Image (cartoon, rainbow, N blue to C red; front, side, top):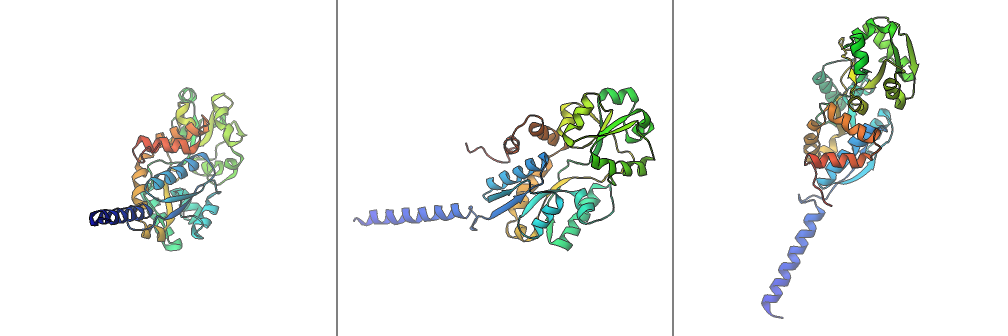
Length: 305
């Protein structure tokens, strides 16, 4: 074999080896990690879980999905046990449900409290929170709010005897539901409270069976039906900003996870999340398809098809 030909073969062999190593290592000299991402069981969490998964897959990680794993206690337990590596959580939930701290209505103070508390107690990290706030809200139609002159919860309380409210059985009894509202805003009496399944609240409102309903700030129906959310003028509810919560050990080994997900966070406003939620809950689309479309729109991933 000619000497030149032999050198070419060696060069090709070395080049192929380098390409294979680069591919296996994600281009940074480390083997690709397999990350397990969890989420809660409702629409918004499924969308967020898919966003995290798709963005990190695009960054070169292998992803195992454990979406719809349960509520906050189940996700927190799985995270501490190392059964999942990260999931989307809400600052207000971390503050009150997990850390059992008092209500605080300052978004930055709440975030700092949960970030510090999770690090000290669980060795867990909160990445940057999104501006969206999935807190409890009271919702009315534009027409009803205008007819009664209602803009705030205090306004609603002043007209409570004239109003029918629809909400879950849970809201009628939990501390941050009707009992909490009465403690903060005064011991008011509604004309009627109708207990309904969560999926039927907005139907009751738009069909005129209720004047006001309980909801969450990022519910898709709010923007889809052009509804009014009443201002919490006495600041009863804490902020519920969403952020990835993850194991400190994983972030230290792969800091690029934080870079990827912190780039996503600022894009998630109330209006954006309302739209995305309605694409799934209102139009029946798959959470993964809605998440992918959003990430492509903001160039957070590239279309490989």
